[in-house]
Length: 623
Image (cartoon, rainbow, N blue to C red; front, side):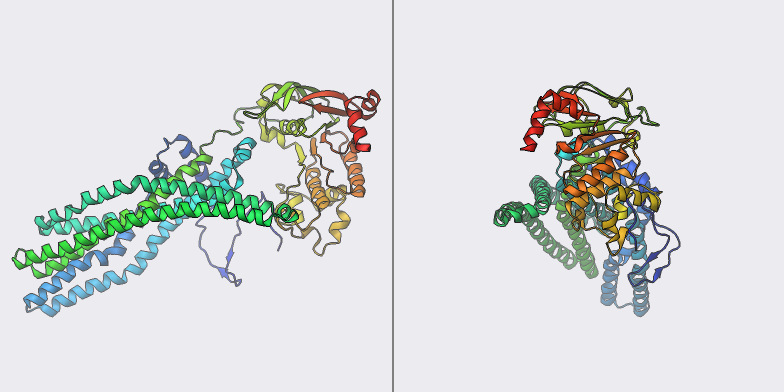
């Protein structure tokens, strides 16, 4: 089966089990449109909120209040057997003690009530989980979708500063933790409230003295929670930070495996990771110990209270202030009360961890380092005329990379940037794409300042080939047509032929539908780079940016690709960052970049005749 091209995902009309049998569905529970709307709502929620985790979480579910209420109603119906059982148990004990004439009739009535309520647990449980699960999974998908949407909007500088491992941890682990918190808040906590309220109402309606005794456990619970709240919060935050740090280092380790093996650094890498994992284990151990001390403290406290309640109710029955059956009634409800309070206290670490994850997700959803394209000029076409006027650029707290660049590029010209590593060539390409903006000076596109352009509309007319080819797991077809929905076979093969890949692809058993491994690992470096070139060429762009696009090619492929590029750049503005100076002889302009300035500009022959900086670079490559 052919894999679906990215960017054109479509939900299948029918779903299937693993054995191929069709699942019969009446309607779609989850729709893309609903999730997309929820994504935007969650994004707005984070931006407008005052950073209160509880408020943020409740707002995520505000569209589904009706479903949450229905889930709570069915939860109440589901738990009725547990709530009613102590009352019926006490009544049966009193019946045994009193031995009335209608003893068996009343026993039968109580048995029928309990049987009915118990059997009703099955449908009510199913309905409760149905209503809550649908809502919870929608919010889970919406939250992850909101993060992905924001990640697509955030600037490249944000992505450079935040490690991909941290982003992955927030996207997967933190959302999962928030989902667990939601489950506790919308099922467990309301259930606890129902049980506690039922216990207190039954007791207060029977005996105020016993009710006053019940109330004694409340201040003890509050004091216990307050004593452990801060240590648990600190421990959870520390463990989450360690988890993010570890996740980022694991991803780096996987990416570096080839280099590690090539330099026989396996032991060094293992020792490094062992240290990181050991640090995370120590932090996790401290969290576990705080949780253990907390858990054991409240367990002992409430076990003592429960035994005291038994003694107290037994004394009241002995003095005939309550009936014998009431001992079981009060003991059952006090056990219910203490167990519910214990559950609340036991959930404190989960709740603390969940709210910490709500704040962690906000690191992405609240980030304001985004491309602001609202209200800016939308490009209907791109001629390809550029001009740098005294452009300066530097990253924060770094040395300037561009120190007043001046350069004019006419429509259809091929301009090559050459110079030593770190001179600013790739920075210029990032400015042309719009990834970065000048700190001072102006860069105009067709006479318009690039800072005033709607960048997505501008980028529709350009194609880029980065220095390091970027391929995803999927077929060759998917990688070449990435993001395109209407492409003919002729267009695909024309691009592949121009990239000198036709013969290679036809030799594969599945041809153009051959699946690629992660990062295209089953292709050579040159093949991966040529596939990236084909992806750029199939878009028929007005402007092409090639960042050392031929650096990974062998001599034969380089010549064939160079000829293809020369043909395809005709009539298009082309920017090339060149490492091999021999490949740019046909460029209209060669700009020599040194210390952030354009120190020379001219054709290949002109610059060689001057015997300046370009001549020196060319001479060094010929040695």
